Image (cartoon, rainbow, N blue to C red; front, side, top):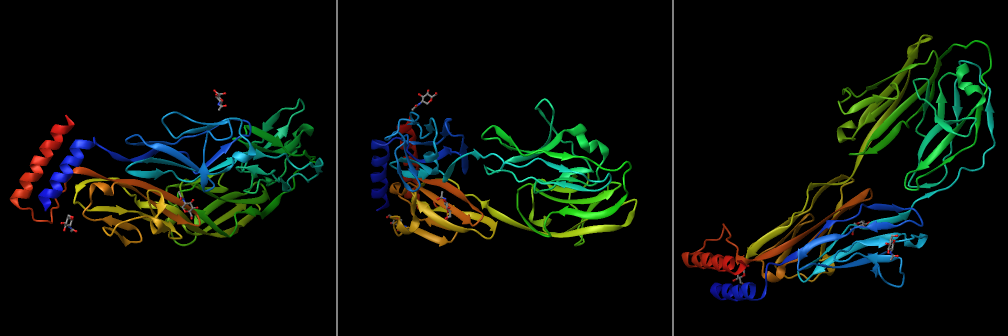
Length: 442
Ligand SMILES: *[C@@H]1O[C@H](CO)[C@@H](O)[C@H](O)[C@H]1NC(C)=O
Ligand SMILES: *[C@@H]1O[C@H](CO)[C@@H](O)[C@H](O)[C@H]1NC(C)=O
Ligand SMILES: *[C@@H]1O[C@H](CO)[C@@H](O)[C@H](O)[C@H]1NC(C)=O
């Protein structure tokens, strides 16, 4: 029986086929791709496989022919990459590229192609502020609609029409809602009659827009001394995402300028990956970790206020799905057992959805040798040459998803299963087969 199978395979493998491999995507875009209307956008999609894969695209779940009725879009030769010229609103959508040969169908992530936008500020009246020297002051900024969100700065509008950035220090800083905060006003804040303005920049548009003018005319001839009072702080209940940069900040008014300090109030020290910034007012977590969840306190004092003025906040850390064990391509001989694992962590815990050749497992045509071992593991026992396939898994939560796309390739040799006792004859046959196979590849 085994001999028959082997001989059959031998003829099949050596006689008809060279080495074959299901496709595997090697280059694809990010989750979000922004374009500036009128400009060209390229969505790369390149796969490897033998024979060379054919490429198809879907847009919003429907078949999408790049070189269809619209001459602005072309697919580059021999790859799936598409280039869209003179982009328009209607190019927005969710796109997915597929690479297919006779041994399987591989798929990219879903790419959210979006038009970058930056509106202008609402027309604002010029505003003049007349604080007493030594008092605190806040200038508001409501940035215009921007996709993706803008970078926001404060600038001084110079007489000749240029802008210079406002220098931040312990006394003058920006809160996380873009307001400019003066912990105490000095005569120099008048800027010789020049105004302050908020500037929003969208780097995908390579464009910025400037808000209304804010003039400061400090009053008084000498600075009033002020004790420390709370001005602005990050919310008392916050949550951040594991792996992201994260910042928490406290701003206190007072003259002399208050000194700001931080500590954890749950008994743990501040770890090394947390840095102080913005002259002590801000804590920066370069890459947030679960262990950063906890209770924090900022406090400030100045010469008039030896007793601390404080704010406390509780930080929770959630996580987008991430790989604990990423699925891997499997290449093995006939009769072997293939395992595919898709172990993902996250908070909330991700759900795992499996696909075979880009079709959901529930709708895929799998035989009885395919077994779902658990939510995050599948296996195929006693594989045959026909089992070559691409297996995908989507580990998804409300915070996002990660996508595994790997293949099973079955080689033209019999798999020696260690647990299986092989009799001598089988072993010799195996050797012969390998020799023949090597011979046929030369
Ligand atoms: C897209 O623009 C590029 C560069 O301007 C040009 O070479 C190409 O022919 C254009 N393709 C289409 C389909 O219009
Ligand atoms: C994975 O699942 C999420 C949630 O259903 C979905 O938004 C996303 O598009 C899926 N990704 C792929 C590549 O199918
Ligand atoms: C594997 O397939 C061969 C040939 O079809 C069969 O003889 C054998 O019993 C199978 N083994 C298992 C473990 O299913």
